[in-house]
Image 1 (cartoon, one colour):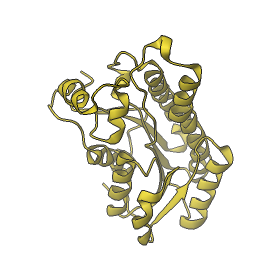
Image 2 (tube, one colour; image 1 turned 180 degrees about the vertical axis):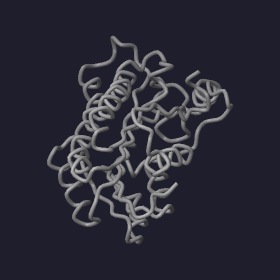
Image 3 (cartoon, one colour; image 1 turned 45 degrees about the horizontal axis):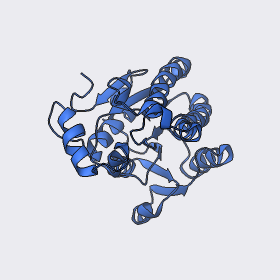
Length: 249
């Protein structure tokens, strides 16, 4: 399952899943560019000559273009893109979800992926190879009440990725979506209703919903992303990989 010497851009690199993905890719010998609004957590990784941290707003077209241009200039190719970034939604009745909040969730979780994938496609089509992995959510299959904007954004990620896979297939570029289940990260607490106990909700609502009986760890997602970016996934495109402990069933 080789990914050695390939260059991968990872968005959301400062978060739990993103950081774990960066570390697994570096351990596998890849060159990695980690992007996030907050890159302080990535400072120690910059001692590795195969890693570069870039602070960026992924809703800014010019910033996205700069990330890809700098990556190509520094490492010579762009072989993979892993869109790990995203935001949650506090469980909220639809009548209490503002239009501004809805638009923010859609923009961060989907519009930014459109921008990064659009840029990646240009580079990958030119070189005739590449792999894209977009992080969705098990909620597209098993929605929860109060998360209507979040579920819509992740459902869009799935449909978009499938359409992209067909469009890029003639250029030998793969695009897949990975749906994580409830993961033991700080983001999980953001799905709780305002005022409720985060710890109790994690245990009683999320962990109890996983057939394998435990929350996922960031490493579980990172290993699966690495697989989809590797040569071992050469004939996998347009696929939906559930890494959720059976939550989608």
